[in-house]
Length: 288
Figure 1 (cartoon, rainbow, N blue to C red):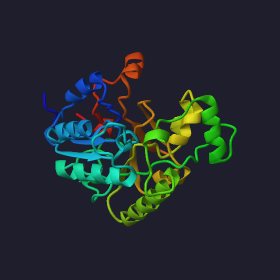
Figure 2 (figure 1 turned 30 degrees about the vertical axis):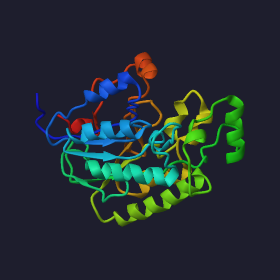
Figure 3 (figure 1 turned 30 degrees about the horizontal axis):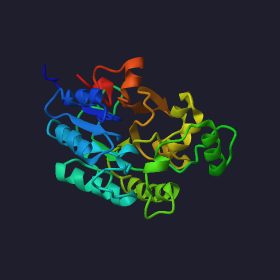
C-alpha cells in the first residue's frame, strides 16, 4: 500500500558482502514514489558491491544521498582498483555522480516534504551529507594522548581494521585528513547559515555520548572527533543521522534528535533483532 505522504528515510551499515544483508538490501523499497533515502555509509568494501547497492537504491527512490563510511574507504588486497586514500574517495564520488547519487562534494539538496517540526510539519530542510573521518581524540579510558590511547587499544586487542586497510594518502595520517575535512565542512556549514535548517548526515557520530554504551571503550577513538561536538548546537540543525556503531536507536542531545540507522553484521542483528523497516523515517512523526 502506497503511503499518503512522501518521507525522508535513512539507513546505514548495510555491509552487503554478507549474503543475508544483500538479500535485505534487495528488499528496501520506498513507501511513496517521492521518498528520499539517506545512506550513511558502510554499504560495502568493494567497488562492485557499492555500485550494485547504490544503483539499486537510486533506481527506486526519488533521490539518494550518500555519505562515506570507513568500509567504503578500505583498499582490500585483490580489489581490481587499488586506489588509496583521497584517490579512493574521489573514485567513490565519481561513481555516485554516474548513478545520480548525491555526495558530500555536491550542493546540499533541499527536502520540501514533511518533517522538522515537533508535529511532523515545518518548512524545507537542507540535507547535508558530511565526511569527517576521526582523529583519535576520543581517548581510551585512562589515557590523555592519541599515542597512549592507541597503545591501550593494542594492549587490549581492540584495534580497528582501518589501521591496515584505510589508507590516508596524500596526508601524513588519518588525523590530518580528518582536520582538512573538518575545515572544509565547517566552511560549508557557515555558508549554509542563511538557508533552510539542516539535517546532518555523517557515518561517524558527531558527539561522543553514543559510544558510551559500547562494550569496548578502546574502540571509541575510531568513531569520531571532538571537533564536531558542538555542530548540532552551533548550526541550525533539526536532526543528525549517523551509523558506524551498529547500535540502532533514537536519542536526543541538547534537544536535537540523533538517529543511528545501521543494519550491522548478521551476527549482531540475529542476536539483538532489527527493525522490520530498514529504511527508517528520519522524522517518525512525519511518516504515514
